[in-house]
Length: 441
Image (cartoon, rainbow, N blue to C red; front, side, top):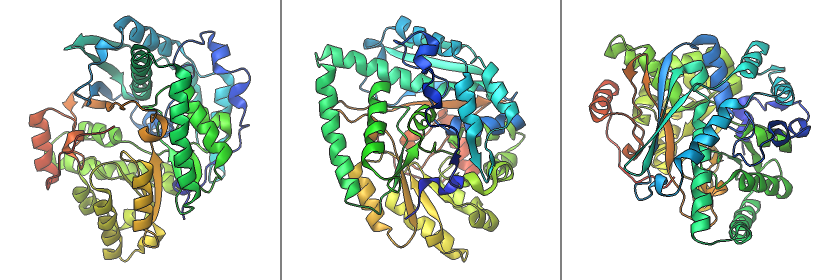
């Protein structure tokens, strides 16, 4: 068994668990009806990546763009543009509070503060850059352009806001009372909790902020998990605000955008772009060392990643995060990769995080038992399983240093970039082909 926090060296939660409650962020904002009421209501890896970017690449010009991958849903049919803008404008007015800064100061790794005082003071003064919203073909076009050190924080706020506005509208149009919806969700959650209890080889963390049904439901899910599951099974949450509220570890390391932006930074020629993936792994290790050493594999496809990862990196990094493609095939490939380098796979961990449900989690845990450690980042199916079809929404970097960026993925349905740029990056990274499977979420 492995705790998901092994890749963060069991980050110590030395800040008081109730630091965010005195007063609550809602009370501080004075606007209880907004969806986002705290700068901390986001994924932890926005801060771990954000600190590295703040120190090394703060002024890199980037552009982020929103994409609705659920083709049958037209968001502008359900969400008024003025309501969406109102929420985003409020996010721009939020600031890190004294209590929130105290909480971040209390997070430690290897006995030292995880976040520097310089970085926390930067966050206290941060106002997110402006955004652009238009409506095209009954969907929203959303983009953010600015310096990477500031623009990085928009992603999760945009996604969780759109999700909540959509499901709020859908519920009302179907005339479902919120009590009825929550009752259905709780019934489904009870089944998940029961199955996890019966399978103590499973350990997972909540990764569901970006596509949750609502902030209130997300809070309720975490409350139930904390109350009913031991920490050996429910490891923590990627949501920093809820980690603070419930006194559980915040979990997360890196995302695709590090690799994508680095290709723009190192865009002098194709040889440099090829080297950009490994440059991220080097930067990350140099900055955080073993404390956050889980490597994301699929930005330019996993076959390339395993060709590119050095023996030293394979030995140093605790493990890998799988986020697209065939989960079983990935795990088998990882086991072969470690064994071929004389590394015992049983000492490494795979964090599975691609569209998980409880049945998939149990199948993976059983299949790899005793062969490689498994942990699970459980997202949409954990925080948005109440009887409605979930959405597959993403915000990704599309430009860095004036150059188009690309994410290839191990499932081409998740690819990001213009067709000509995707083909160019396939050639650069020796892309070997992958299936195209519609994204559930």
